[in-house]
Length: 306
Image (cartoon, rainbow, N blue to C red):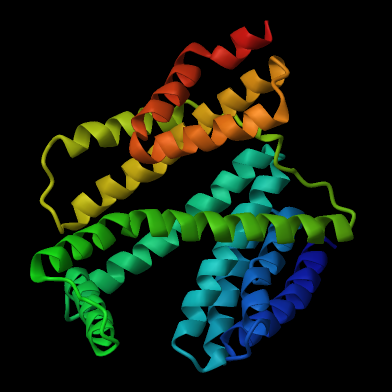
């Protein structure tokens, strides 16, 4: 009876997945975007109901279904978003906290985005720096035609280095954005189907495991070994430091929000203070990372509650 239910659910949700996959590949503005964001939901619902092992079978089946799209990107997109759905559904089934579910989905997205970036960097005939320089030179030529003063070679090189430096930030932003939207869409689906699901707690209650601090310190030590710029190892270390450092910053901001809540600070002062802290973090990100680290080590929020 259980196997019959699994096969029945798998067939229905598989057909829904195929429909969303086809819509996501079609060049229909807005429709393809909505379909892409909804693509993990069938796998999430299947894993939420039946667990990780049947969920892995669903991911494999949907990857093969991606071949039906007659598009090279079909199987890749199917595998990526079905895997995201599996991670989300299994985390919900295990009754993980809302923040843990969100982080699981976000890290899965980041892994795929980062692997895609590495694959592009390895297989592309031109280096990432050359491609960025080419785009900037085209923009400069258009500026010259419009009579706007362009950049000299030194300034152009600086711009290339700047864009290269923010590529990890772009990857994190993309992964976090997709994770939030997927988490939100999944919440709408679970509520519609009257299925219990985890919600994100209030920001002041965000409390990350200490393992993130340990990983941050490990990669920070690895960065002092002097990995060669441009190598995959260098890219892994830099992106890991950025991602884990961002989590430590969130822990720090969460602690500040908790302090404001406990001390009943006015909303105007909270907003003004957070704007100042964000601007300070852009200039000196290590400050809020240290605040988050001390909170993880000393459990400052627990002391505050006492």
